[in-house]
Image (spheres, rainbow, N blue to C red):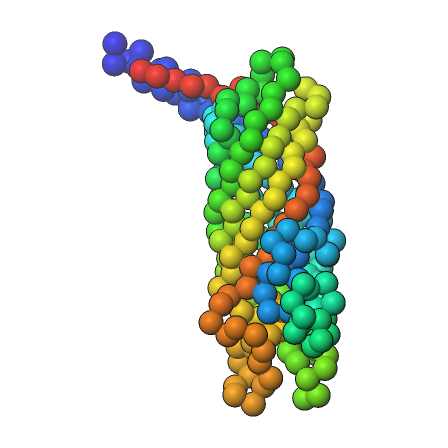
Length: 228
């Protein structure tokens, strides 16, 4: 009996290497929630494009990684706050985000059933962001580029996905990223000292949002689920 269990385990290990994988393209928009520009939670202003890879470990969860680039744009003219409108600042930053985490589906998402599949899902993980380091110039009227900075964030996304063809999945999602910096919008230079111009609430870190769709291709064989 022991040898049978060992053989079954070896077969399962071999088949486990042929899991279901996904490679996809994400496209959409982004916006900053900070001290410059609109304070609306979802208000896409900058173009976003990137790649997504998934390792589907079961019908309910996947390990997911992504690399996404975007233009982060904030304009006081789009704010509903009269004081921001009078200030009239605007900033354009570039950013690249690398993220790793787990995607959890609320319902079973069986890619091998031959039937249409659809489910809402939740994604959470950790991310690294590499972004333009900008700051207000001495006139206090515009921002200047001052190199690049790297920081960390916590991504949380809510989405809905469906298979539109045997190997093609279409998903739409809205994702919030809490960051550990207050300078995505150039409002609080972290290495400039007291002489640098700082604006807004210096005690709150910035957020940014990704809103868009993913089209992915699924490949690989059905995993071997072994219960013994």
